[in-house]
Image 1 (cartoon, rainbow, N blue to C red):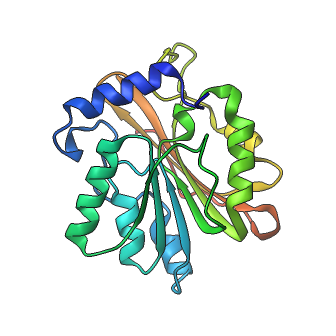
Image 2: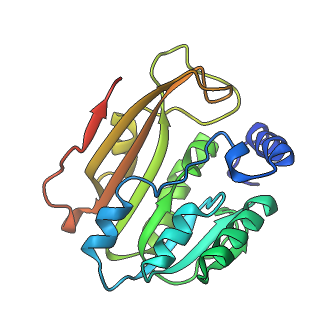
Length: 223
């Protein structure tokens, strides 16, 4: 059984069916996910990166342009088509696989794992399995960056769309092995359903406990 709920699988298929270009997707972004610039600067030698749920490939291509060996995963063929097209236009090579993390056996260890929309689409019952896979794939000292839709109010529950897990629960889910190193929050309004009409967009930078240092907060913008 897939870690993705049936409602979310149907939602992804519907959204990709009508998306003619990446800009048509509600989660599209044309800049690298927050904290990737800092990680790239801290690792000028590059490394191996895993982009789980790569979408249109913006983050995968950014990392490859900066000398990283990137593996890009998505279960939607349309997403991988967008990713390959973007990589070809940028003149970079990616290791692209159509799969989901439920069945993917892994491909060695990674220095960076990025999840820009995978966790909040999973069935909650599979969060522990997700965490174990993550830890198995992380090289000692690796970074983990998570983009997540955070619940703002109790009434912000829906049977489809991103799970909205609050920050304290996200931190607790990954403890004690992973520790929050940095955090960013922005609140968006006027957003189309199922993400809207408003949601808190959060980005976490986790490090393994032995290499975590002192946590620091980049931004908690509630505007």
